[in-house]
Structure formats: structure tokens, C-alpha cells
Length: 349
Image 1 (cartoon, helix red, strand yellow):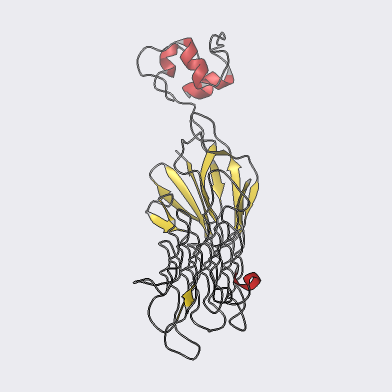
Image 2 (tube, rainbow, N blue to C red):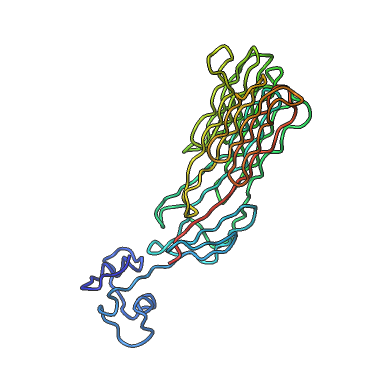
């Protein structure tokens, strides 16, 4: 706080100087009082303390730094170090806000399930002194890479994305989507958000769990279920704010693969950006019924048989933590998931 410009009390001065209890007798010649009054020598009266502030603020380096009013924002699109050179106090700032986003998972081949979004953890917005405490040290920042695409034949499932970390916060990479094949091949994998299921021997199975390992609030959501036969579609990958969609079977009027779950918007960088969309599921046969990628970097699913007849699934978007879209028909392989991001914000004046 800042002391009033009018009459002030001894207890208000003690509070400003973080002296407890507030009834403590003040030595007007003490170093802390002189510093507050900006009077290194001579007599000091209460009027010299009017309108003064003992606010001290965090000072730090690392990443790409931007200024937004009274706040500094450090953005890491790749791994690095956030180095705290000075820690402030309650009157200024001594804690930080963060967004820690992991890498997205990749989709499965065949009637592939969409990749799950990377785990999404944030405490923004929070008071300048009510966020995550920091101390004077270097904090290693890990920005998780997006998962590599499924390789080889259409029966290979997708891969999980890599974790992102800052201080005590770990966000888990998104789960991989399932592929066409037996239930083991078709089951997606768990992660920050779970991968969508592929089609198991022309039958559907549930999607994989999200928020794994569990944290509160949850870092993601489960993937969607697949469906078949005849033909069929993979489930959508889970997103930061929404579960992946379930595939709708072909006998229905509007069959399709599951859509990827939507991500969550966040304005910690100063602009509203949606992060952590799940990938859409892949579809068979050769018509445009693939799942759409979730808002926040999720890739669209593909459709059609091997050798053409429709687009491949799309990659997740870099630094949005999106899952990639499932393949279609009996196409092999898949595109990679999107990489993650770490953002740190604090009051500096």
C-alpha cells in the first residue's frame, strides 16, 4: 500500500514497513524509516512519511520479455531459464502468475483417434502478491515438444506429447490417439488430455482419460469414443476445457468422427489466445466426415481410404499445445502434435 497524504498513524507506518505487531514503537531514526522517508540524515517527522511507499518488486530475466502497464511478461516458446534477481514484498510484488502448457499428442493411423491436447495449468489472473511465490534463483523452464507422428502402417497408435515445467508446476503431455486394429492398438493413451479412440476390429471403444496424473483444477479432459462398423470414425482428442467428441455411427443420418475438445482462452500475454485444443478423429469411408480440431490448435482429422480420396489429418499448432488430427481409412502414420509454452507474469512497478 501507500501511506496516506494526510494524517497518518504509527500503526500505518509499521504496516507499510512490514513490522509486526503494528503497535510496535517506531524509532524514527531507524534505517527502514529513513529509507521510506528518503531522508538519509537529519530529523524525520511523520509528515516526511506521508504519501510514501515501501513497495518492492520482482526483478527477473529470461525468455522474451514484454511490458504491459505495470507488469512484465516473460514468454518461453522453447526451454530456457527464468532467473529471479530480486524478490519484492507484499506492498509491491513477490509472487508470479503463470501459464504452463505441455506438448500435444499425435493421432493414430487408420480410423485414428485424435491426439489429446497438452496439459494446461494456470493461476492467471491472481493478485500481485497472491500467486506462486518465487525466490532469488534460476528456475529451469521446460517447454514440452509436440509428440512425433505415428509411424509406419495404419495400425500404429499416436504418441504422447512432452511435459512442460516451471518451479513446482508440471503440465503433462497430451495422450496419443488410438489406431485401427485390436483393442490394444485402438485404445488411446492418457495424458494432460486423453487421446481419442481408434476403431477396434470395426467396433468402438472409449477414449483415454485426461488430467493424468490428476491435479486440481484439472489440466485437461478425456478423449472421445470411436464407432464402427460399417466403416467408422475415431474419437476426438480431449481439450483443455472440453472432452473429445464421440464418433457418430454410419447408420445415423449424420455420421462422423469425433471432434476435438476445445481449449481454454487466456490473456496472460496481453491478448486473448486459446490454448490446448484436441485433434479431430479420422473417418472412413471416402467422404468428408472427419472430426474438426478443437479451438486452440487442434488439427482436423482426415478421411478416405489408402491411396487418396481425402486429406490426411493435420498437425497440432506449435506453441498452442494442440493434438494432431486422426488419419482416415487405412492410411498409415499421422502428423505431430503442437509444442507447448510457458508464460510468467509479475508486477514490476
